[in-house]
Length: 138
Image (cartoon, rainbow, N blue to C red; front, top):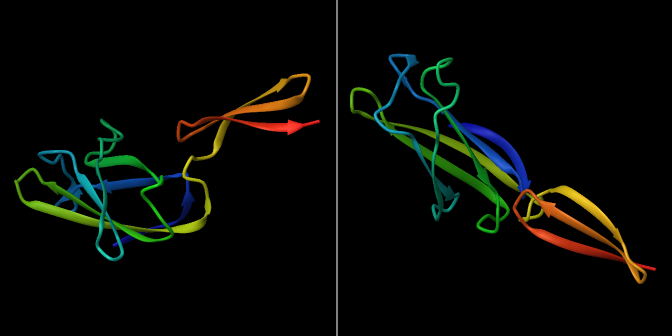
């Protein structure tokens, strides 16, 4: 099991695995699938990991998992399964902790100020895709 660290809500957990066969990089029969579960075993998500570093490192697969409203504070596990080039089932287990911080909407990635006679408005977008506004009354 590999522990990936501690993450607040609203960020991406980098799920990555290197598929090996006889301790060397392997090209599996299909892309690995990560089944995400809580520490109690409840299913949360299923993610297919795309190939990474094609032509540089053989067998590396990596994909982001956004910590949105499906997640709560606690420990999570991703069981990554794939079929190696011989057709045998392989797996790796990744773990991480969601800590009490952040927002399920993500971090603000764009911000604009709009001056109006009655107030100054802040328009913003989060990396979770939310468009919102705030107000600073005068």
